[in-house]
Length: 271
Image 1 (cartoon, rainbow, N blue to C red):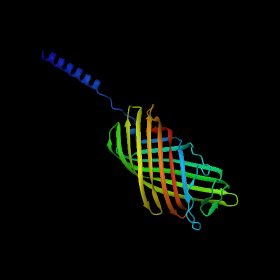
Image 2: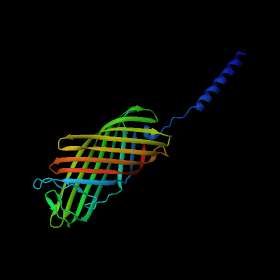
Image 3: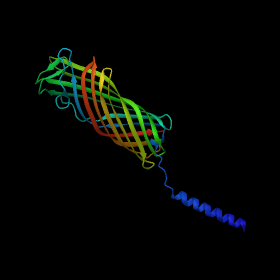
């Protein structure tokens, strides 16, 4: 009798336990939130607006030039984009992202332009070049971290490089180049919707004056991630960045204001 009662209680307990487990909601496990290494490569297609000024020691403050409208540079261009992340521990991570945008233009000037040590007169046929690259690096800490959710802050820098020039027959080439490391504070978050789908976001912001540079940067990223295979996935997102730099460097004395905004599409591996 006692044996029968014990078996009955055990059966009821097993049934109840099975019912509870079956009713529990499964927590998503997305590789982007949990794998140690994450590497992505894709295409960034930004709309770009560029204004720059190159001053002269002899002619003084130069003209602020809109490179797209005044010099004929492309306002849209698709370029490669690269991303890598290393989770050092459960909460600490190192991240890097890179893209470059190199453009050339040709146009007959509609007004005089003082650029560097020369004045390019109205009507001149000029060739222009404006090369830009941005390397973003950061060290982040997730103050809230679970299998399917992550919120954190990071300290890093956008290392921006500029190389711009204007050329015309009779005057020659006037140009300058500068590399400006711009420190930023970041906030980031990732959320798994399912084992295959996740969303991610990041905001960078900082403004300061130091050494030969002053200015600020604001950068934002939003991504929708899809991981159909355990170690291979895809992402579609949106990037925007606004940079304002004033430099007194001997290779570039002047100011640069530039904005980028547009979609990004990429494939990734994680492990």
